[in-house]
Amino acid sequence: MMRISPLATISLLTLTGVVFLLLYGPLVVPIASSFFDVAHGNVQWDQPSLSSYAQLAANDGIITAFKNTLLVGFSASFLALVCGTLLALHYCSGRSLAREAMQFGVYLPFLMPPIITGLSLLIFFRELGVPRSLITVIAGHTIFVQALCYRTVVLRLQSLGSSLVEASTDLGASAWQTMFHILLPNLTSTLIGAGVLSFALSFDETMITLLVTGTDSTLPIRLWAMMRLGFTPDINALVALILLLTFVLCILVIRQFPSEFDSQG
Image 1 (tube, rainbow, N blue to C red):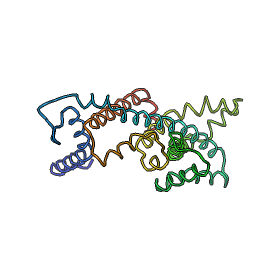
Image 2 (image 1 turned 120 degrees about the horizontal axis):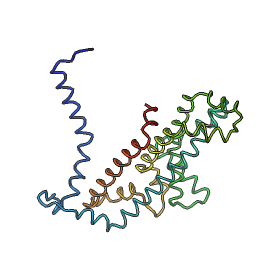
Image 3 (image 1 turned 135 degrees about the vertical axis):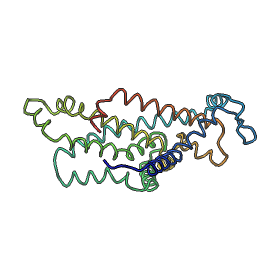
Image 4 (image 1 turned 45 degrees about the horizontal axis):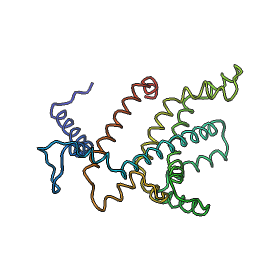
């Protein structure tokens, strides 16, 4: 084992501390600020208060935008998982030029700049006469995150190999039985991971949403509009609650599916 000098150890610890401070330090500021009042642009550190959370509960615009974001995120993630899994199963069932062309089509919206994907969707919906709404936002997010779900499932299917499917077929199982009793149980952790990542991408997506949304705004669009006038203190409370929700969700998922995540590692 290579021995590291005390100076090198201290340097590495210092560098690690600086990196963590730069990454997570900005998150501490809005969380801490959410528990104190702001007067004339200055935080009153000597007067702890929950007024920011009360203001957030009374801000119907932010609450509605947050609900729209959750609706779009969950819907797009579910649709992307279903479509991506079906496309991945089709791709891994054989090799042909048509399958390669299909794969190229799945990847293309994800690899293009979001503004190009958003403009393409905007023109597409306009030519079809489809009014912009949360439905068009869900469709845009689904197309955008589908490549992530598809690629994740393809990699998992390729790691499983064809022996499980062949054994199931030899034992007399139908294609549906093989999928529900053999493939889906082995894809559980993959689908969970892909779903979480897809939801995170959808939750944060701004450019595509800006181009295909209607009168109903999602949270990123709402915050984008507020940048011109400045953020109110209740935004600090919103950031704190989203971070808490994210932390709790990650802990619950890891505790609920420990074996699946261990097998993925």
